[in-house]
Image 1 (cartoon, rainbow, N blue to C red):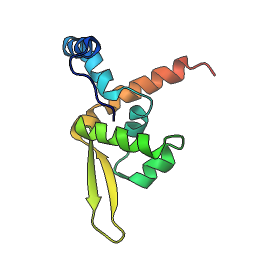
Image 2 (cartoon, helix red, strand yellow):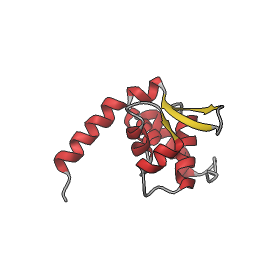
Image 3 (spheres, helix red, strand yellow):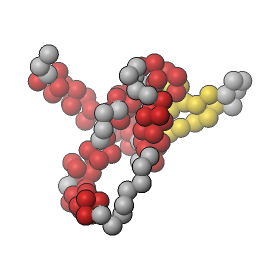
Length: 117
């Protein structure tokens, strides 16, 4: 992840907007191309890292790892290391992540209705 200059005007504006507007706060947590897809793929339950990678074919490993870390930091996803041979990592939505599912479903329905192909 890249470092954000905490004294920049852009950073200060972003902070004020996310405090003032709950929609902006939510979109800040969901922002980007990959986070909604990751959350959508976790909607049916726990997935291994490799399952997420296969489900989101165009994503690079770097971007998947970066976004999973951000979602974990934002407490929307839980990462669990499973100590078996060979060890693997699973990801699950937190309660806060599950609370976003109706909103994601509404966004999906809107997208299907207005999508121009």
